[in-house]
Image (cartoon, rainbow, N blue to C red; front, side):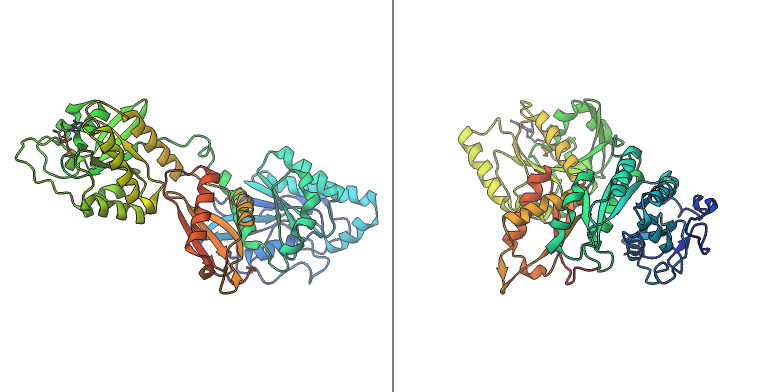
Length: 490
Ligand code: GDP
C-alpha cells in the first residue's frame, strides 16, 4: 500500500511562492524538509511536462494534486513515503522545480531550454546526493528528445541504480511502439500511464527494487556468513549419528556434547573448509550410551520441529530397509510445507547395485510432487558422497535466498507467457499483468492475473518450471501465488 508522507500527502521542500518565469536562485536550494527517518529515497527526474507530478501523486496516492490546478506555483522538491506491507518502505522524491509558466519558455527556443536544462540538473543533483536510485521520467507520446538523452547520460554518470519510466502509455497495446526509441538510453524501461494507472503496480515494485539496493549497503556484495543450520532426520538406526560423525570428523564432539544429558536438543557445531555448520537437535542422533537405550522415537512432529530450526534438512533412509510409512508421511509434510530438504540413502555400501537403483526409483516416485528434492546415495562407513551432501546443502540454501529483481522477472516471464499462452478456460484466457518476488526462503513469486480461477494447475506448473530454469532454482522449494486483480489499474 502506498500512503502519503504527511496529512496533506505532500511535503514541500523550500518554496511554494508564485514564481517568475525564471526562478530566482534561492528556490533551487536543496530541500530542508526532514528526510523520512532512515528511509532510502528514489528520485524522479525528467524534463518539464512529462508527468512527474502526476506520477508522484499517484505513487503516494495523494488525490489532491497541487500542480496543475495552481499554475505558477513553483515546487522545489516534494517527498512522499511509499508503504509496502503496511510499513514505510522508501521515499519518492519529485525534483519538480519547473513552473507551468516555464513550460512556455521551454517552447520558446534553445536559449531558454539550456537555462532550464541547467536548472533541472542542479535540482536533480541536490536530490541525488543521498539517493538510493533514480528514475528518469520521459514522455512516450513526445518520443525521445535531446534533453532526455542529456539527463540519461548525466544519471548514468552518477552510477546510481536507474530506470526509465516511459509515461503517457495508456495501455498495453501501444507499449512496444511508444517505448521503442527509449531503449537507446540504455536504462531498464517500464511503460506506465500516471494518469490512467497503467502498470503502476509494476512500477511500484521496480522503484522498491531501486531503493532496496542501498537499503542494505554491502550486504548484497558479501553477505555475512552465519553457520549453516542442518537437521538430520530419519528413523532409528538409519545411520544419522554415523553420518554426523563422519561429516564432523570428530566423534568425541557429539559424545561429549550429550554427556549426562537427556534427550533434550543438542546442537553440534563444526567447521568444514572454513565454513561453519550446526547440526540442530542432535539428541536423536546421539550415540546411544547403551544398546538398551532404544527409546528414540521417530516422531513426525518432532522431526518437523527440528526441520523448522534448520536452513536445510537431511532425511536419512536406510538402503537395507527401504522407505517406511513414517518416511513417506514426513516427505509429504516437508514437501507441502516447502521445507528445503534432501534425501540421503545411507548404507549404500550394503545394497547391491540393482537394489539400490530400484530403491532410488521408489524414492523418486514418492517425490513426484516435489521433484526438485535431490536424492543422494551415501555411506557413512565408506565416506561415499559425503562431500556432495555438503555441496548440495549449500546449494539449496543459496537457492532459497535468490532474489530476482522485479524488472528482470517480468521481462523474462513475458517470453515464457508468450511461448505458451495460458489456456482458454470457460471461454477466456487469464491475463497476466505482472509478477513480483515477495519473499525469499523459500523464493515466493506472486503473479497478478485477471482471474486466478482460469489458471489450471498444469499451467502453474509450467510457470514454476520456467522460473526454476530461468533463475537457476534447481533444488530449493518455491512458492507460487496467483492473485486475481480484476483491474489493471492501481
Ligand atoms: P541412528 O540411529 O540413525 O543415529 O543410526 P546410527 O548412526 O547409530 O547407525 C546405526 C547402525 O548402522 C550402526 O551400527 C552403524 O554402524 C550402522 N551404519 C551407519 N551408517 C552406515 C553405513 O553407511 N554403512 C554401513 N554398512 N553401516 C552403517
